Image (cartoon, rainbow, N blue to C red):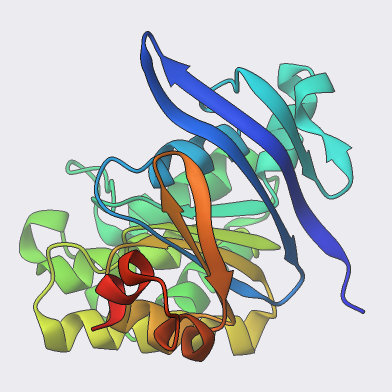
Length: 242
């Protein structure tokens, strides 16, 4: 059995009178890709922001690597975050920095590595996403798909044990979206990291998921493999796949 790296139990989160997460529980084991599907506004992104402590849950418990993040001070929470890579929906590159500088930034802030070690890590991360030739380009010179790849390279730079993907294919044409989905799959095989992939792209889910969870109205409506959910008799679940 692979070790459990994420365990969420009865998570709740509201914003005023808007109950975004009513009662969500999930677990994630090492090397597993868990896709969370749901329509816009269903609470998918709020879930992963709670997971890394960017938002504070109203109730429930979140364990990362068997530690309750609600009991960690800011210093220990930041240590935990170093083990997690985050691909933002917009890629979130610094516009004033080159690709090289964007990838160097977390290494400079979070490690004591030598310049040569940092250079090697940057080259490796860019090679992994097939964009070593873009190392000295500015974000304004990159296409949407290239920005996603660079964002993924930056997420990989610290060799994380968990990867969080927030809508990795949003805003991309179908061909580029499929390329990003297969890249996520390749990263899983190479690094054996666990991943949570937030998406409403069913094709991305089909390519990347070991397991899929569907959220509706802040609750887990269904979960299983792609094939199991594709064959569901529930009309609402079927609407995602047909």
